[in-house]
Length: 361
Image (cartoon, rainbow, N blue to C red; front, side, top):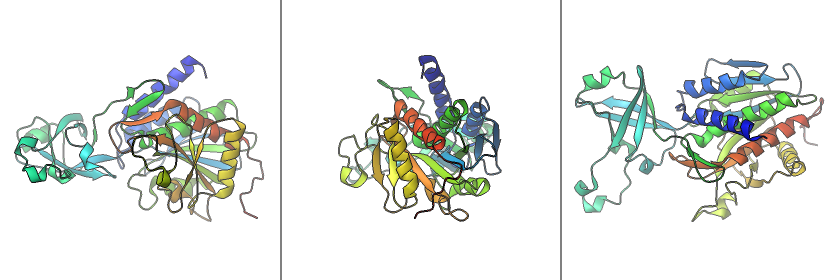
């Protein structure tokens, strides 16, 4: 991939990560994704729940679903007091310690509203309480307002979503840091795989990339289940992030040995079809793409769990990106790992036969 093309792709990734879109409020990143998809896909559309779709090889079989969720964890306004302080609760799974002292962007009716997270100063905290974890219910947002009327005038009301105001950051080499890497990069990878398939099509298969919604709160399958039901795919590949264990004190016995820059992670177990897994490994080995393997003995904790039991069952695979500092405002991944994952997905689709079967003998 040439330098100019790579730069274009990274610029798209930056726009995708910068667009705030917590679970249930994914409209802005979804529109960025669909606009990019429209530059090369044969067909682009959305559904009533906010899932976004892009297709190449329309009407061809087998039909492959490539899924990456476009939502991120966030917060939601629950109350505004008479002095203009704003209280919030979590959208998705937070380590509440990372929220303290952050800046925020509220997605208000009149536009984004900046604010800061307030908390009692350390000087005023009793010594015996200083080592206790601060819960989300113990902090508040300060918008600079002095009354509830001021807050209303800014276009902020109960139910508005917000994100921590942590921008895209280029680190050394090909590393990037940002909020929303979990799992905006999955939505990026599936669209990049579709782009590869638009320039070098599969011989038989048709492919639909899906930027799914509500994975972070998808206790009943989220947007992945809905979109899989609508598409009725013959096989599905999910892209998400997984824990990078190349940091101090990581438990490799429990989570495996996965390195940022060390290639994608291919999962086996639970929701993941063994024949799909073996084909993913074969593609990675043929293309000489570095990769590692991860065990998922129970749930995969990804969109795969919402897809594999849809209708009469969908053979499903999972490709993950090693990610440091998951569910924080500064998650870290390797750009090269993203493009390696896209190549594995495209290679998988190109290798499918017209009569491909995933029925196990």
